[in-house]
Length: 270
Image (cartoon, rainbow, N blue to C red):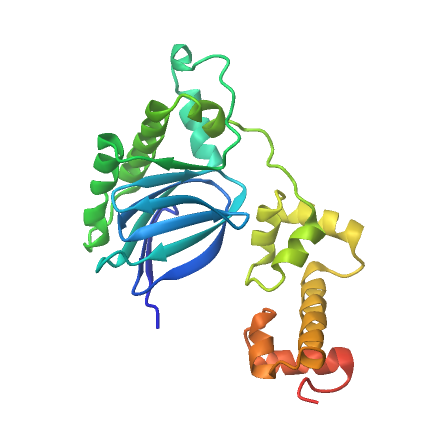
C-alpha cells in the first residue's frame, strides 16, 4: 500500500512522499513550480507525455490546466517532490513592486502550459534551502516563505523573459464548458469549490451557470450521472457491484446501495 505525506507551509510549499509509483490527475489552479528532490516525475497533458523530470530538475505548470502527474521510484530512490505555488494576489503585489524599466516590452506569452526547466544553480539553491524544513520540527515563518516565493519568481524571470506575460497575466480565468467537464470528471472526488475553480469560475458563478444548463443542482446531477453509468456497467457489462460503485465515484457501498434503490426502485445487486 502506498504511504504518502504532505507537509504544507502557508499553502505554498508542499512535500510529497510515496513508497511506490503513484499517478493522479491534478487541476492546477495556480502557477506551480515543481522540483523533484528524488525519484522521477512524468507530466502528461491531454493523454500525451509532456515532460519527464528527474532528480534535481524542475517543471513549471501554468495555472488553470489539468495534467496527470506520475511519481516514480528511480533506482532505489523514493519519490520526493516540492511544489511552490504562486497565487494571483502574491503575483499582483510582486508586479506592483517591479521597476518598470526591468519589464520587457512586446513579449508574447508562449502557447505551452508545461515548461521543463533544466538543472540550474539558482533553482537548485532555492529548493535545497527548503529541504531542511521537511526533515525538521522547525517551521519556516510566513516571512521566510514569502521571501522564497519571491526568489522563485525571480528565478523564472531570469530563465526566460517570456515568463513575464505568463506570471503577470491578471485577466479573468478562462471558462470551460461545465457539462463537458462534469461528464469527463464525474467519477473524481472533487468538491463543488474545486469543480468551480477548474472550470474557471467562482462558486457563485458556477452555480448560476450550471442552473442555465440543468434543472438539477450540481451535486444531484453528479449522483444521477454516476448512477446511470453504474446501471449500464451492472446490466450491460455484467460488472460486480463491489467494483462498479468505486469506479463511478462513490466512496461508500451503503450510500451507493441507498442512492441506487432510490433512483431505480431496486437494489444494484438485483
